Image 1 (cartoon, rainbow, N blue to C red):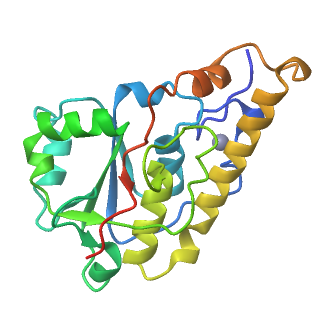
Image 2 (image 1 turned 180 degrees about the vertical axis):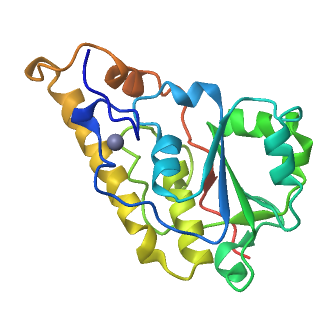
Length: 222
Ligand SMILES: [Zn+2]
């Protein structure tokens, strides 16, 4: 068996979390992961979870019967990181950041369905971010339309804006860039990589499907 990093759950040779301390934020980050995302090689929600202090990661499709998620959503001021009509820019909320910030980790298709199936989540006030940079994830998952971000990137931008301290969340973005680089190197030279046995590394590239990590995207200003 290959050694695995107990933190990011990647094979040790693909671990990018070692030595990266979790970043602190006033908002409690709650990641809701569609089960399909969990099997991808680069699971950005998992990496986000280990690199944001006090965050929670819950996996599922329907959360209406999930006591913990329901309780967190009921916290006054809880918000959802998701673009759309009425979404407020994270930077505009820095004086009073949401005590709980939900982020959905799914393709756009699944994220939309998750909101439809969980009206209590869809009803939360929304927070959006916008990025002028292309996603570091772009080479692995082709994004339709404009600039769509991985869950990790969207969270890093949102928390950086809410905390008025983007630099605090730069190490996690850097970890994602390293992870993508490792993955691409593996994909380009499978025969030269003695560790490549067609496991998780391959699933991440081939299994991305019609992509678009949700979490958030280039968002409307406001
Ligand atoms: Zn790790």
